[in-house]
Amino acid sequence: MNPALTKIGAQMSNLTGVRAIMKDIIETLQTGAGRQFINLSAGNPLILPEVEQLWRDCTVDLLNSSEYGEVVCRYGSSQGYAPFIEAIVNDFNQRYGLNLTDKNILITPGSQTLYFYAANVFGGYTESGSLKQVVLPLSPDYTGYGGVALSPESLIAYKPTLDINAAAHRFKYRPDFSQLSINENTGCVIFSRPCNPTGNVLTDEEVNKIAALAAPYDIPVFIDSAYAPPYPALNFTKMTPVFGDNIIHCLSLSKAGLPGERIGIAIGDEKVIQVLECFQTNMCIHPSRYGQAIASRAINSGKLANISETVIRSFYQNKFTVLESTLDVVMPKDLPWLLHLGEGAIFAWLWFQNLPITDWELYQLLKQVGVIVVPGSSFFPGLREEWEHKHQCLRISLTGSDEEIAIAMQKLAKVVESVYQGDTVLNS
Ligand SMILES: Cc1ncc(COP(=O)(O)O)c(C=O)c1O
Image (cartoon, rainbow, N blue to C red; front, side, top):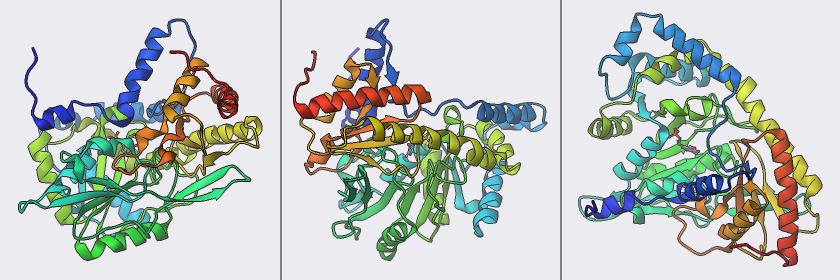
């Protein structure tokens, strides 16, 4: 059958960003029979035994409680499972001195869904036909934002400024406030903090400045906190969540060990939450309640925040240290390679200034030596202008063993050195 697709049908059946590359990676792994690859491409967190045990324990507790039937055998409210909402309200009020009520919370099936709602509730065409933009204030950012807007022309990202420490081979992106435009044509603002793919953490000052630009127009600012404290607490630099009248603080429990359960949480203004909730009712009635029921146990006991700080954070921070210290030893000092400061998340981001080939070609060369990473150009959704930097970066997941990460960096150093010397051959 070859049914005709609508414009939206055609658009949504195209894989965007990293998903398109994942197809190539899966094919490589399947057809490379017998070859050993070090696969540092995944956005999938590793299963940490202590974290898995926490979720097992919470599941046993749920199974043994009278609540079980209510959780899985009945429909519930579109807003989310009440005991879970209450757990979030209590935890955030206590931790951050807030005055949240249940009206400030929406639970979604994963946080990706939340950005889909946001991008289409606040971005796209208004009744009068004008286009409201979804602004990504600092590009590169999460590749998943690339597929969420049903009017893709609404997505607009801004080039950053770069803080470069060439001698140390380190750099950091900063929002370019001289270019960033948030005005009456803006529908909403979205950014990740800590950032996937770069590990950047925008400072409190930068976040407050973005929120202040949006406030006069009543524009909601969605801060994607999929890697932020209190869970999964994948920040390696000190950071506290920023709250404010027009800030929607968005969490995900995926990196806290529950990606399979699909739990996203929006915390913010009552009116915004209400609109998103209605969208959710129309789309899927409500998210699954089993994950919410076990998560409320892990939050109420304080174990989720504790395990995030003591197990999850240190696990990935150590991986970053292995990667960083290996690169410092094996990468030629005279080449212009720059590692983004590792301030959080589960990735390292490398920039090769004046790279003689594209990031896609470099990705192919690395595959030839058994190392799989992700070409950086997938992480600039909404950035329409050409910028050579887009084709000079790689994202490396911190999801291998220490040994695999070290070996992969040694191989990468050799490949990169030969690329700059101009003597590499790409097998077709
Ligand atoms: C920055 C960021 N935001 C959102 C998501 C989506 O997460 P989920 O839908 O599993 O909550 C991811 C997943 O990797 C991510 O890295």
